[in-house]
Image 1 (cartoon, protein in one colour):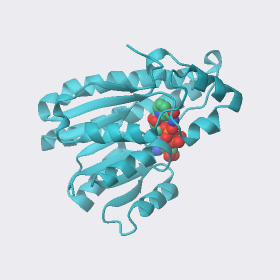
Image 2: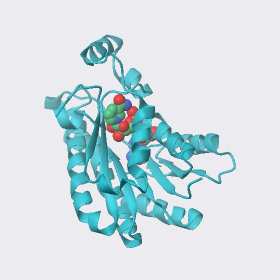
Image 3: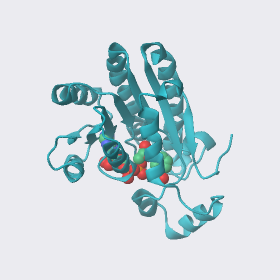
Image 4: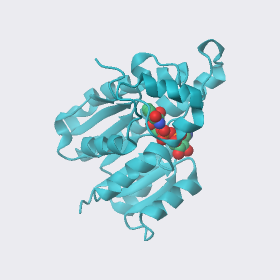
Length: 247
Ligand SMILES: NC(=O)c1ccc[n+]([C@@H]2O[C@H](COP(=O)([O-])OP(=O)(O)OC[C@H]3O[C@@H](n4cnc5c(N)ncnc54)[C@H](O)[C@@H]3O)[C@@H](O)[C@H]2O)c1
């Protein structure tokens, strides 16, 4: 059993919930954070009804104050934090020529400012401890200019990959690594909720393997990148996109 502690944002549902389950199975003490407080507390309770190894907390990733409060709460509760997974994200598809300033700012805030604040708050904390792991969840859309999820979302995810490198460089000498995972379309609720059935058929046909990606596998990758042994993976992006985009 590990004594390691991880904080995962956007863990109430979807990929974040699966990431939390995988860290929990790996023996971590897991803090599940989300803006959807009730749902995230319920998922933490499902993982560990005693609360000894899973806790749910409210964290709006657009707020630096919320990241700092989560860090302080976990240091009080479990003595330390070893890893952060910046997973929370959101988008509303709008044709590129019609994106308003408000829509642009909102999507950039949730998907990119979140990564800046998470890396600032936990990067500083990890650097002071001389150890830490940050995993940022990017997206294929940020690599291939995909607009299926919105140009503002694609731009934010491209920015996530850049911030991953910036923080990786800045923190490397302090024993902290920062990496990204860049998934293609995954077999998750959001895909069925936001993509019309006809469009989904086209997406599946465009995938070289003909099937959506596994959130479990992406979560396993996050656990691997967060391990103490992962010191030589830094500033990298792990593409998990079914061969949709090769570079
Ligand atoms: N689903 C896919 O196919 C896919 C593909 C590539 C990348 N991703 C990325 O994976 C991550 C998770 O996606 P998902 O499919 O699970 O999405 P999802 O919409 O199912 O879940 C996102 C979670 O983030 C939370 N969230 C939204 N705004 C927040 C905020 N301001 N503060 C805190 N939490 C907030 C939501 O409440 C929700 O629980 C995102 O970063 C997404 O961009 C997903």
